[in-house]
Length: 211
Image 1 (cartoon, rainbow, N blue to C red):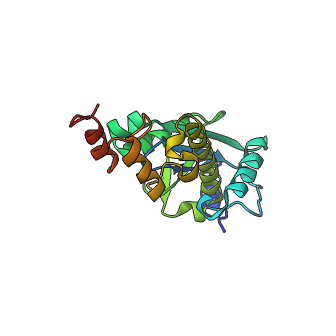
Image 2 (image 1 turned 135 degrees about the vertical axis):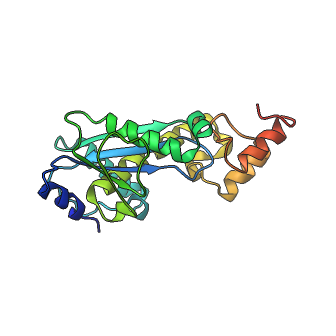
């Protein structure tokens, strides 16, 4: 289970406000990429808080409610939309969403930001990148919950607008059901045209031109 091992090192060094950052949605063929940023109080405890990928959707929703209703927890999210993903590429768009999430935190800026994965480009705050950080740091795990729940809710909303693709079932990932819907209906406005196989289908459905 994640804990405060990384946060404690920074607090001992005088960096008091520690934010965790994580993203959801780098791999799907559709929908935005969403980042979460969370600053937890030093005495925060949770029996269930873990990497969002290890939890059920129901458990994530419960934890999201606990985090967002706790007045001691500072949290925010940032989004990079499909058009930005296609224009920038998914890595740069993910970094953009992460910067937006930290910038959206209310109150004093963090003294240190713990980031899941690799360092973020053009990041205006001190950072420490931690591979598999969502399984190691409570702050990053909390951020992973914010990012995952908010992105899943976005995909559920898109499912109501574009029911042919069943976004609520696969959240935009390239499942067999999703690929079959793409083959039948072509890409929606929320599909990432820079991703294969959406790119080829965009050409097929436009008669050789990407619209």
